[in-house]
Length: 85
Image 1 (cartoon, rainbow, N blue to C red):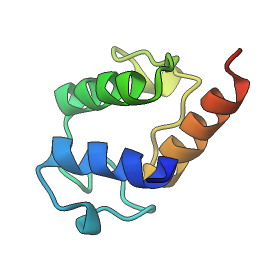
Image 2 (image 1 turned 180 degrees about the vertical axis):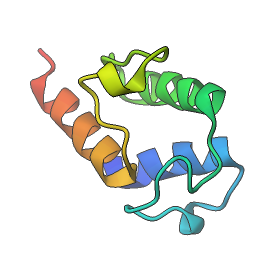
Image 3 (image 1 turned 120 degrees about the vertical axis):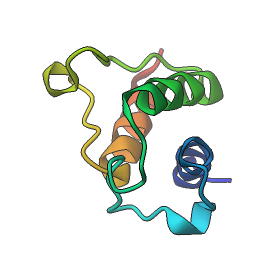
Image 4 (image 1 turned 30 degrees about the horizontal axis):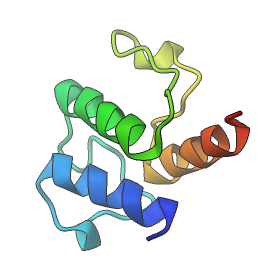
């Protein structure tokens, strides 16, 4: 399973949707994921990929990790995986 597919599966699970309902252009808001769901998604992604996402749950706009849509989340995760020691 690709990184993209794994991220979509995690996000779909948090949104209680089928992975086929999650597109790369979907925003978390489009999918009905609230702030708690976002934090749970971040934890699940970190665990799945053994990475640490630089994310400020109290102020997402101040984060270096772009969560504007599924494609930017996937891109950020791919970069974190490439950059890990």
